[in-house]
Amino acid sequence: MLTRIFRKMAEIRYFEEAMAKAQDRIKCPVYLSSGQESIAATFSEIYPNHRVFPQHRGHSWYLAYGGSPEALRDEILGLETGCCRGMGGSSDIGCEKVEAHHGLLGENIPLGVGYCFGSGQPTLITFGDSALEEDYSLPAVGFAVTHKLPVLFVCEDNGLAILTPIESRRSWKLTDVMKSFGMTVCDIQDNPNEIIDCLNHQFFNIKTYRHKWHVGFGNDGKPEGDRLAYMRNLIFNAETIEKEAKDKMEALWGV
Ligand SMILES: Cc1ncc(C[n+]2csc(CCOP(=O)(O)OP(=O)(O)O)c2C)c(N)n1
Ligand SMILES: [Mg+2]
Image (cartoon, rainbow, N blue to C red; front, side):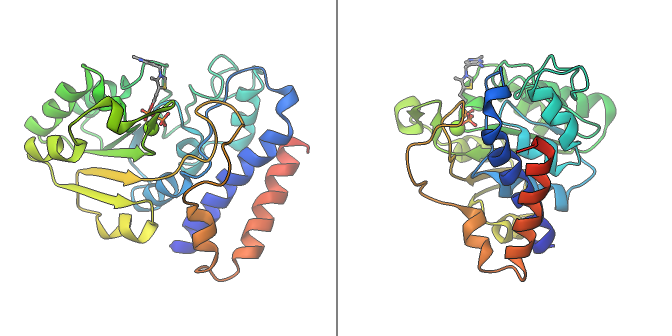
């Protein structure tokens, strides 16, 4: 399973690296998953049949859950053949398993809970560390707990909302609030093995590192953590897997 997770991580990373080389052709703002790939890659292997409700930074979830890379490329290029007919751009992307976000931070939380309540289908709602600061999101979590809905909540905790760190935004910890709702909670790193060990939890706070700016291809130097680089040393044939991913994504973007 770790090798499959690593391959997905590499495909997400190299999709975005090849995309950066094609940036002259891109006219919409882009929200990159680089650095955060392991979370979507791991959940998609453990829970492949959940319906997923991500927020704006969703390339990793879309690709990990089987969305077509060609349709994502075309979406980002604003083409009719894109996964949302070229109307959504990088942030509002969907496929069979993944519900497209619409731009309102945290909206995917009540929408995902409502979907689960109506359909009874297992649902995974994923968001950044700021989404539960929005006033419509916490009551939706409470509703899911009260009605014992089969929803997993996954926080991709990169510590930032655009440029504002958690410490400047709130004095409370998400994990404390979730525990007070009666949820089983884990507070872990984005290491696939740690995520797998916490399988039966309902709320996952997962520390991770955004490699690029909030929006766009820029960066502020070497990131604090790089799970793909860390896993390179653990996976048999990692070099070949990465080369295949790089070649595939460069051919996809024509770079
Ligand atoms: C209701 C609402 N408020 C503000 C914004 C602007 N906004 C877009 S993304 C973002 C920060 C998101 O931070 P986080 O949830 O941690 O996700 P990350 O970008 O770090 O992945 C903000 C404030 C918005 N889209 N919707
Ligand atoms: Mg964040």
